[in-house]
Amino acid sequence: MLGSALGLLGVAAAGCSKPKRPFDPASETLPPDPAAPSGAATNAAPQFFDTGAADFFGKGLIPEQRATFGLDRAQILPSDDPRFQKIVRVSLPAGDTFNNPDAEVYNDGNTYGGSQLFVAMDGRPTYEMYLRYYVRFPHDFDFNKAGKLPGFYGVIYNKGEDKRTDTDRNGFASRFAWRKDGEGIVYSNTARPDTPIKVSGKKTWTWETGKWICVEQGVRMNFETVSQGLLAVWIDNKDTFKEHGYNPRISDKVRIGGIMFSALYGGGDRSFAPKTDTTIDFAAFAIAEQRVGPLPDASR
Image (cartoon, rainbow, N blue to C red; front, side, top):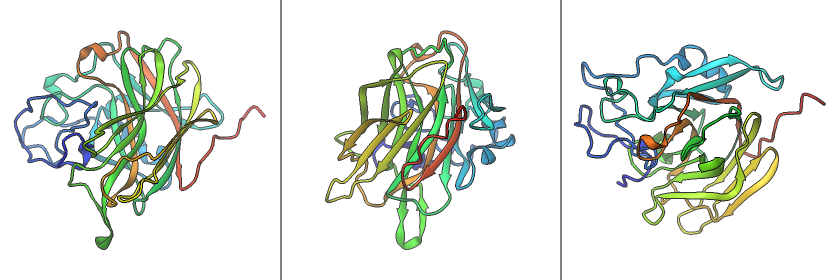
């Protein structure tokens, strides 16, 4: 099993000792999902679930409790934009890339600040899927070194059993992300030994602040024998980036399972944390088997 692959597909024994290397979103080696042992700290305040996460993501998308953290930092609020009724605001405190050790979500090493939630697709995992959502950074947003935003994640799908399984470390993730000065990228974690981490779209776009940005991503999976993959990005309805031959998987059993909702600063240490308290807003998530497209302009 490949430790560099997406950790939600990995299962470890409950109650294991602290790892030599703390949880690092850059590597996606997540802590174990099984129930924590008696007395272990857990995510005690998942307000995002309690206040309507299922309604927020809408039909066909199912929020899951596994491998989540920081849900108490995600708040559903009324929208200030007529195109959508509700938004999710994730709070990111200054200096906080690691949670307090006394409040570790998994009791298995440090957990990064920010929020993470897996939102599964209702139905059979697929080879090709398109995602649309809106994101807004405040005017004074501190990009610092790097951070991650929502994108797709993969699951192992055993067709004969007609079900998905999350027991192997050989999935993938294709999340939007930012680098220094707001450079936009797609940050992919794969099970491929040659490219366990892949950065796509470098120097193609920059995340603007103080406005809603329509973000779209399309992923078509490759096959084991012939690379037919595609990664496509649209920013504010502009055809921004395409990568033909996108190749994130090593088995035809790996398919797109849903949305990996991430809003966090990531890297390897506290130097990645914001210097001031900040937030990121999200709205209007939608998926489809073809490009979704932006919402109609309410001003017209």
